[in-house]
Amino acid sequence: MVYNLGNKRELFIDNFFIKSLEGDVRQQIHKLIPEEIVLTTDEKHEDSNNTSYVSIVFDGRRYLFYYRAHARLETAATPGNNRYVLCVAETTDGINFKRCQVNLSKEGYNVVLDNSMTDHLMKDGATNVIPGVTTAFYDTNPACPVDEKYKLIATNEKAGQYAMYLFVSADGFKFKQKTGRFNLAPDSGYDSANQAFFDHSIGKYRLYHRGFRNDGPTWKRTIMCHVTEDFINFTPIGKLEFNEKFDKLFAEGQELYTNGIRPYFRAPHILLGFPMRYYDGSMKPGMHLPSPYNEGTAHKDPESEWNCRIFSRPNLKSRLHNVKKMMRYALASTDSVIIASRDGKKFKGWGESLLTPPPQDDSWVYGSGQVCIGMIPTRNKFGHGAPDELSFYAQEGNWGDSCTRIRRYRIRMDGFVSLNFGIEGGTYTSPFFKFKGGRLSLNISTGAFGGFIAELRDKNGNPIPGYTFEDSLPEIGDDIAMIARWKTYGPDVRKLEGKTVQLAIKARNADIYSIAFLSYEPDPELPSYFELTGKNSPKTE
Image 1 (spheres, rainbow, N blue to C red):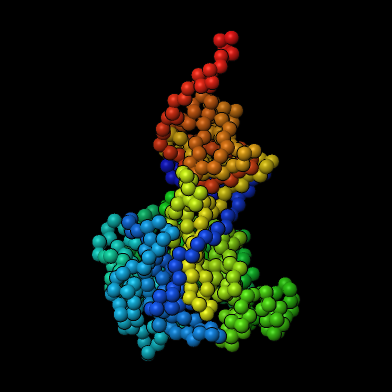
Image 2: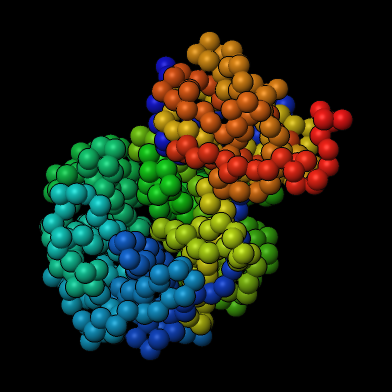
């Protein structure tokens, strides 16, 4: 089967655009790099050490940053409360944030959802946590009414009252309830950052939310999906399916607490998710497999497991307090991983961590290392023409005595997973495809002693004259759009547009993050070397 690539960008986040890797080359995941704190929930009306489930919304002008506040998890030094509110800040550059002055709630000047707006959804006087279990998205459905472009998936996670509701807004601030309780599958879960978006590839909305699966001794948290056109009628897609290597980790204790799934804006045919992975470090019976360091004591001797695990974690005083409520509050740990899909149900998961909790005094607790929903292109710290990067955000200080901090993290554009070519060199070969465009562009970083050459082959896998490895001009450097060139044709591949071809790349000491075919632009005219230097050409001597 020939893949219609067109002018889409292809990442190496999965195996879809890889036929073979030969020699010293492999797929390599890259971690997020920490930068500065951009927001702290220390306003008087916020005062929160529990700011999970942050979602970032781009409306074409700015990025709105929705986060929960006001609720505080109890610590040894600070009492807790469950009075959640949903607050909003904004940024245009992903680095400088300011709280929005909306003044719609007496709870605070940047509060957009509070208990007064959701109390009617509760029963029997139960604690109202809905404003804090809410995610936001901007609706790109062309048929969406203008007064409903901003949407919230508001969740009641209380036992016996589980439900999700849709709230809508024209400006991203003044929200109203749109639907009643979602009619989902009986085994759907709710205690999570459940979220939705409009998927242009199917012309419908996807809702990703908590689900459960049986692995090992008992259930594990996972992700489910539904499809809907109106947020009233939902078609069940079921639990997500993962590649074998990632899937087996559930039986070893892995759980996916959130999902963070959205189309990747530079390649919207690819869905990327950044779930918070949960591992229950407690010895509650049936919650995880026996410890390899304490064989035979699992589920039988919690005292032994407690002693061997507690001293490797920071903030012993806080953990001694938390264990009185539940052992997992003291020993559960979390990080973030990356998953990718092309059909919305089958996902390639990477077991290696994308983000781990930082080595701080108030870190390595339940919720640390959780990536916020969404990403923002930001200027490169190198400046001077360096290409933009991607910024992610994660909270710090949850369960601590102070307030939650939101830290920015950065990664190269498309930089999640690369084809990593070692110093011995290797060869990448693509499947057969048809493209639209006039130049081959690579997002690539090489060493000075390295580089790449490229070859295009016909439908039978034979090198096309003029586009062979022997014709390819070796290139080195670091660019998110480095153009491949050949001796005769330069960058011009227009004669192959619409034909069935195959791409092969030989490289060493390099990372390739993505490829795309761009519209044709001729290279600038250059004077000859001999004109520049004033030297005589050997041909004239």
